[in-house]
Image 1 (tube, chains in turn purple, red):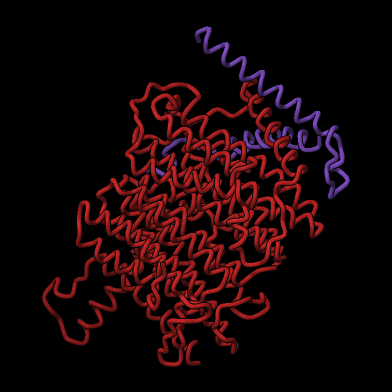
Image 2 (cartoon, helix red, strand yellow; image 1 turned 90 degrees about the vertical axis):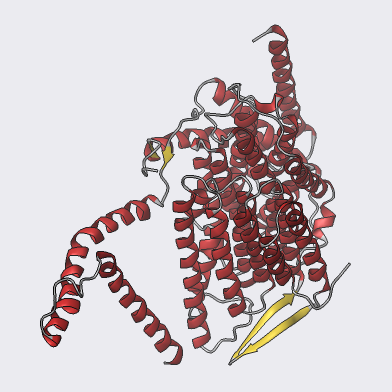
Length: 76
Length: 563
């Protein structure tokens, strides 16, 4: 990877990280409308989004172990 | 412009006949003109019942126009036009003609005013779409098409059985709300469920859509499942069982979508997930929920169509659709990449894109009815959508590792169809009132509240962060060339075992029986003959018991009708 690409990638990652931090901090600044109690937890949607994907990915690894077969399993 | 006194489906059927006998530019003109003229006819339909035909004791109502049938009718015209434009460069007559018949059937089904008319179009839908699959001309199109047809035929038989039982219990055949306690309605629900891809009967979707041609899939993904969603919204609103079925549909496919390598198969699993949201909405059954389900069906046809079109464009240009074969195409196909990203943003419910204004209605309805667990699962499924459709599809096709594939932008008609779909996704996302004004019930839902926008952005950003972290740490499962078994492993392997048995034990027994019935008994009656005169081929000996079975079934049906 050349320098230019690397720099662009770093800038992108930085912007993304800043976006995430701002979104999390806005949680404290904005008084959200709540339908349930758990939504009131600080950064509920951030935590939920992050851990939903972690759980999803880990479980799908397990699923792959169970269901994955060689490509021509059905012989076609 | 409105043309009165002409049924939209018949315009499509006439278009199909004309398209059969024309070629080149003329056929292209016919293909594009058909949905436009047909739409004028749709606008000309009077509210309520029209095109009523009396045959014997039955009344067939070919057009029942109300808010629900209107919005689906409009949607199917839009989908047909986009798919036709997308496929203009092909010279595949079988696919183009059957696609027009297919669109005619879907439009006929959503306009049907009674169950018998619905059944007629339901069967046409099955038959015509099967030919769209066959026309794929891939190595596996024929076998897949037959498996697809089997599912569609079973759905039709279930519908017929349901209608017979339902009318036998003295109910009117007018299309309307059904109660699961009435005899026959379970069969009707099963018929709709097979076409909608309910869990355990969903495998035809992920089997067929990746096997059709790049253009055929765009037709397939628009009509069959959405016709079923319409039928569910028409007949089973507020049926609580649908909530459970729907939430299973939203959750299980997202696991498969992560490990699946063929990107068109990922989109097929994604489609089951999206239909799940609609089924949940129909199951909740409040005005907000039904509006949400219908609005989401509308948006899904557009953004899923767009995603299938962009993957179709990649397939058309490179001949590949697997994550392991693709990557780095953004430099060679910048427009397609951009349009695919619009589709990805729309399905992921990024604010100002279409799904943001429709999926949230179903989720708000779930919360409003106090279904907190349901809401949490739908939120989980939403995060999953972002992962497989929002990130995985564009990332593995256009970015990831550059495989050095030969590629360029697809034909202009493909780009035009994708651009139109993308524009509609953004238009609806920015001006949801345009869509809301057409929904069956009045809408008081406001999608752009500070809370909704902020929480959705938080969910999407942190879910994306998780994907990045998991990819960097190598926990994210790599793309592998594998066959991932789904529930259809049971019929597919079972079918083979049955075939072996039929060729073995069963063939021996029937051969012996038919030798006795067809050779020995006549020989005993007519006296001895020369050898070989009454010999039957083995095929006939196998077919004969099947024919007997069909006759017995027919006798049973007739006895049931007049008994």
